[in-house]
Image (cartoon, rainbow, N blue to C red):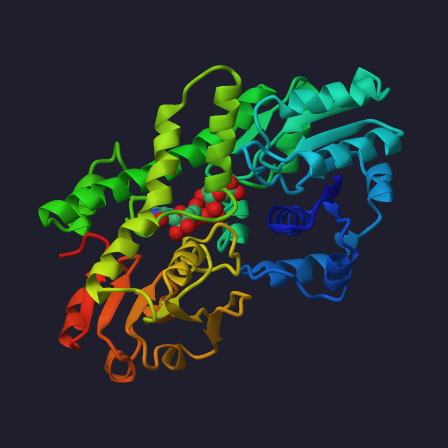
Length: 426
Ligand code: UGA
C-alpha cells in the first residue's frame, strides 16, 4: 500500500519505519524542514531503541522516504496517516491545530479517494469533526473515509510495541475502510477490535487513564504503607498474584510523567466535563500524581532539616528510562521545586540534559555526587542499580539516598552506610 505518514515525531517515525518494514511504500512528511533534512541524512532526532536501524533498513530498501512536501505526499498516496502532535492547552483540553492543518491540506490536495487514518491521540468526537470538515470543504462523502486507529506504543520500546501490539483498534464507518486498515497490518498478529469512531478514540483514553489510575492507586497505598510501617513491595507482590489485578503498572514511585498520561487524563476529564459530567475518579488520579513529588520533598526537608543551600544530586531527568524525553518529567518537576526551596542542583542522566543555568549537568555519574548532601534516583536507568556505592559514599558530603523508583537494593545501600529512603520501603 502507498501510505503518507504526516508527522515525524515518536509515533509518526516509528509507524513509518514499521509500515515500510511490513512491505508498504511509505513517505513520511513533516513541516519541520530541519527534521526532514536530518532524517534524509540518515540521522534520527530522537533516542529510541532499534528505531535508527529500522529506518536505515527502510530507506535503503527504498520503501521509506522522508519529505517536507506535505501537499505532494497527500496527492500521491491513497492512504494518509495522521501522526501529528496534539498537545494540551492550559484548560486541559487538546490543541488540535496541527490536525486541523493536515485536514485543510487534505481537502486542498485530495484529487482521488483518500483513506484518512488518525493515529494521533484525539478527544472523542474529533474524527466525526474531521469527516464534517472534509465534507464542508467540498469533498464528496464517497471520496474519502475517516478512520480512528489509535497507537498504543510506549516510548523506549516503541519498535517492539509496534510489531507486537496487544490489540489493533479500528474505528470507522464503512466496511471497506475496516478492510483497508486490517490489510495494512495483515502481517501483525494481534486481536482486531472494530468499533465506531468515538469508540476507538475512547479505547485509547480509557487505556491510558486506567494505567495512570493503577499507578496513582499504588502511590496512594504507598503513603498508607509509609504511615503504618509496611513495605510497598510486599503489598505489590500480594496484589499482582491476583490475576484480576495483574502485575503491570503497580510500581510505586515519584509518579507518572511523559507526553501521554498527564495530557490524556486532562483531555478525558475535559471531554467528560464538556458533557456536564463530574469525572471525580479521573480527577483523583491526577491529584495523587500532582502531590506525589511534594510528599517526598517534605521527607527530604525533614531529613535535611532545611533544603536551602543544600547540594542535591538527581540521577535521571527523563520521564522514564529508555528515552530522552523530558516532557512532564516528574524528575524535572521535583528539581524545579527543590530550586524554589533554595537547593543547589546537580544532575546526571545517560542521555538527556536539562538546559538551565540553575542546574549543573554532569557527564559522569561519580562527578555528579561530589560534595552532595543527598542523592535522588528519579528515573530507573539500569546503570543506577549497582554503581560503586563505596565510592559514592566517600564523594558525598551527606549520606541520604532517596530512591524515588524503589530501584536499588536497599540492603546493600545500608551496608555501605548510606541512609536509604525509598517510596514506602522498610
Ligand atoms: C503510555 C502508554 O503506556 C502507551 O500504551 C501509550 O501508547 C502511550 O502512553 C501514548 O499514549 O502514546 P509512555 O507515556 O511512553 O506510554 O510511557 P509508560 O511506559 O506508560 O510510562 C508512563 C509513566 O508512568 C512513566 O513516567 C513511568 O515512570 C510511570 N510508571 C509506569 C510508574 O510510575 N509506575 C509503573 O508501574 C509504571
